[in-house]
Each structure stands twice: as C-alpha cells, then as structure tokens.
Length: 155
Picture 1: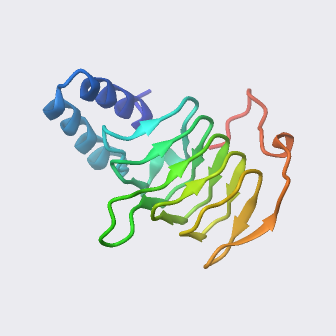
Picture 2: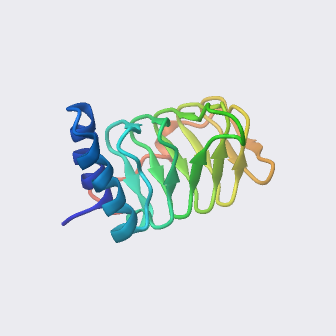
C-alpha cells in the first residue's frame, strides 16, 4: 500500500541523487494525497511512524529526526518566526496529537510529548512533557514503558 513515508523515502532518494524537481513533485503529491508536508530534504531515521497516515503533519525542511519516532496527527515541527534554526529530535520519541515543536531546540532520546503540547525549549532524555508551556511531569523513564509489541499495529 502506498503511504506518505514511502513517498518521502523515494523523494529523499531522488533529492540525494540531485533530481530536485522530481523530489519536489513527490513532496507535493504527499501534500495533495495525504495532507502531510514532509519535504524531501528532511533527514529521518529508521522506523518512522505517522498517525493516521500523517493527516495534518507539517515538518520544516531542515529538520532532523532520529530513529523510532512516532508522530501523531496534526503536529507542526518548525522554526521560530525570523529564525532559520529548527528542532533536532532524538531517538525513541513520541509526539502527541496537535503538538507544536519549534525553535532551535533539541528533543532528547526516549521522550514522550503529550497531546497539544507546545515545545519551545530543550527537553532532556527520558522525560514525559505536557502542557502549554510544557512542563516535565516524569523523568528517568525507562524504555520498557514506551516500546510496543512489534507485532501490534498502533495506528
């Protein structure tokens, strides 16, 4: 089945091979067909997952995303107004529905960002954050509470 992640991966491959116009075209295909904006220049690690086929997700073209990241629907990852620096997202991160992550920040590894959370400052490793502005509600999380059974579909 065709998915926005497969289209992104192919457009990123074309981007690396210097077929820029074809890569841009596939980015727009993703936008029209799946209502997701994942530019061809984004660097994304392995096991990247999107909730509801990426409905409403917007990712800035300079963003770097680690391995095992799950992004729920209606999430925006971008820059501050007038700033060209964007978030760097670590490994094993879950970003909840409707969250906004922006600015020159780093999201650590093994982090859960709750639904409708606004993140504009760095988040350390092994945390759970919620709210607007965000508050750290749990630290020293262990990975076993975050990982899902490999055979189970989450979305």
